[in-house]
Length: 360
Image (cartoon, rainbow, N blue to C red; front, side):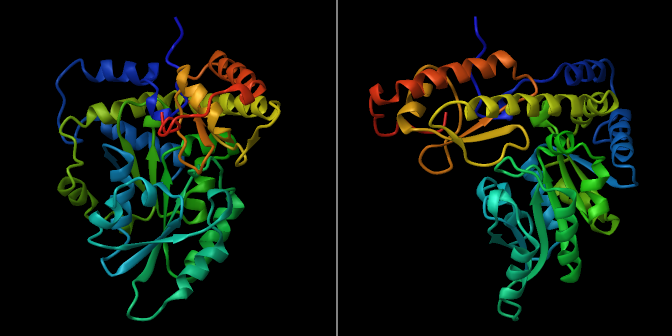
């Protein structure tokens, strides 16, 4: 029996073996609560080793909390935060950044392929500098971006220069940070604190962990009283060891990068196959574990009917196909086979009914 045919999200994958083993080990005996356990300390120390620097580390339940509380630590209510117009903090977090920062305004910056540019950031900063408009205080970057692309180290360095010029703090949404590191083949420090990133929301749930993100402060001043923010926001886990323990095994054994590299490899396989199918083209460069492709709406409906799950939220015909740590070559090849057949017979496919082409 085939597995569920799911390319909708890397959140849909299960818990990887390393994380599962860690949970079993952490479950053997009693341990102090609220982060005073050995697992939480060890996970934080391993993060410091991975980034090769002293940093403050906090664990929260999810990426929305990590992003929102991080940004709140950079701003006051009369400030503004710059983000890309497709950023998760704008599109998918239900106003949480504004809520947890007591009303800090989120301003949108355009940019090709999901990336902001130094010019775009500076233009947004200088557009309004009067007292009647929120003062720009921070910029948040997504690595890998919501469109599956990456910021190269040189691009991040250029953004740091303009941020420093205008006294902006830099936050990085790293929900798929592991995929970026695996693809760029750089040390994590080369795309974080060495290029001016003050805070990183480091996600691992998309990479095999069951729950929990790490908030990493490279700028120690911004971490002041952050534990109180976490507590007030309901993000202090009483049994913190079950959030932290998977990180220990994933980081200590290098599985976080192996799983990310595998997901990227499966996405590359999928992208190559799509490029060989007549009539299809990728919407954005494939640089991490996501593939974006334009499909005829009748083909989208047909794929849904035969059991394939994926999101279609980028205009009519835009499909996002996400690969995970547990995506197999067979999964990819099965999807490509169905795509090839449907594209060859697309003129014979019935027109989709209203509401049939939607996120699955």
